[in-house]
Image 1: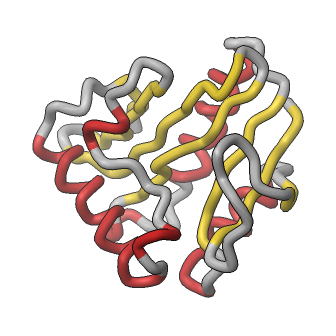
Image 2: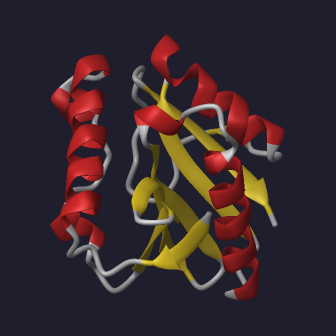
Image 3: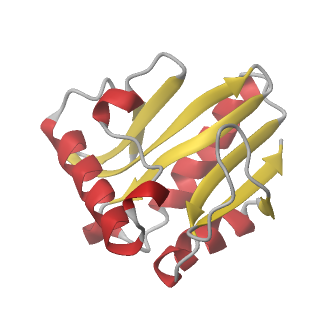
Length: 151
């Protein structure tokens, strides 16, 4: 498994992100979907990583700088054909390490509140994330769960 910074130009990444955005529409109303598309992920305050097994894309994730001490986890997605293999855990470890290297003291995220997001919330809780209120530009939303971790 290789985790690498990605420039978001490959068709594999575009396909995985398209699947990610589509899956959000199955569980959340449009106004409650906070996943970013390719263009929004290309902003300078966001670093995007792809996870590869040989020449196959198996996952992705991003880190957005909210301020010099606070980062936001974005766009965590594992390919459906590679679920339950520890990919998300390895990528989350990598992103937390990167956040620490940048000098962040807090890492936060938004995920869904519905049952389909239970595995993601359990993963984040295993890594020490705790539920919190909205942060950055988010507002209270029954379809969102906000989590944060001091690092």
